Length: 110
Image (cartoon, rainbow, N blue to C red; front, side, top):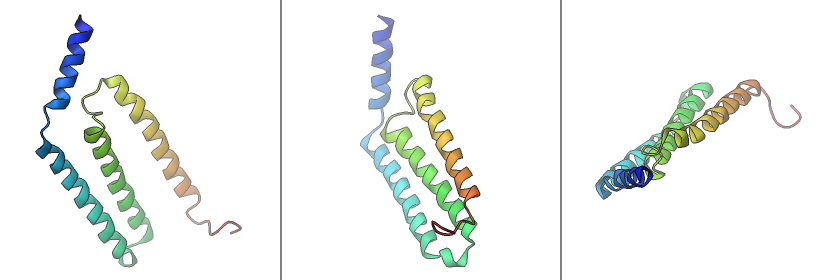
């Protein structure tokens, strides 16, 4: 019976957000996308490393927003959050490692 009550509370937590809330989250994600495009347009005026770092941070922020709010991970049990977050952190670490290792690599044969 307690399991059923927990499920009902979980469903109520998801239903408590209004349509306006999701539009606001969508607007925030759109603004982040606009900033990414603006950064791309002025990439020649900033350093390559700074350009990549800014885009990487903005894309992580957008991904977290989508996962937490539109995929409803924010209201899920901690175990489900860990099942997503741990592999995500591993993938981010691997990407950063490969970017660091191959930052001076040019082309396939270079």
